[in-house]
Length: 120
Image (cartoon, rainbow, N blue to C red; front, side, top):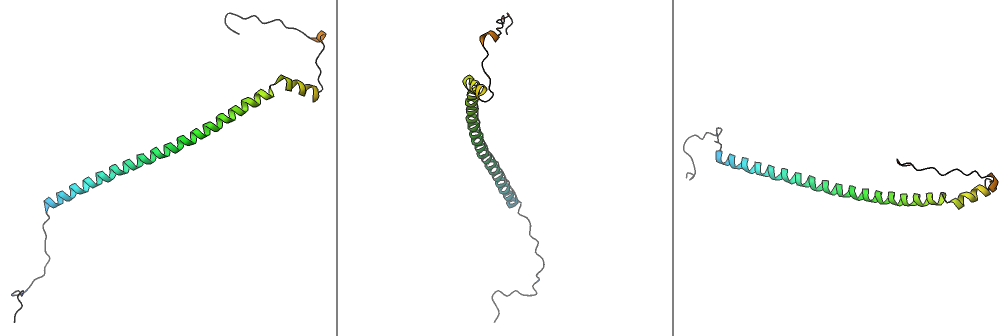
């Protein structure tokens, strides 16, 4: 009994040379190019989005630092006003330094400066 798929004669299993399907190659190249452009665009979008987030955090840091500096400025203005208070300076001069106010006969009054047309 012979097998129904038996081949008559000798079977040569030599290398099979397959032709390239040019249409399929062009389709694959087009799909690859489209995928590459899509992924490239997606990467650009993600990078820009991350940059926007980073800049947002930086803006918040700068706003916080600005608020700190404004508070520090307000504190320094108040401190300067306190330190320049004439009553405080007079008290320190009398109590710590032992200074006294000179009698009126030791006062030297200076004439008022004349204002010029060009400014002070």
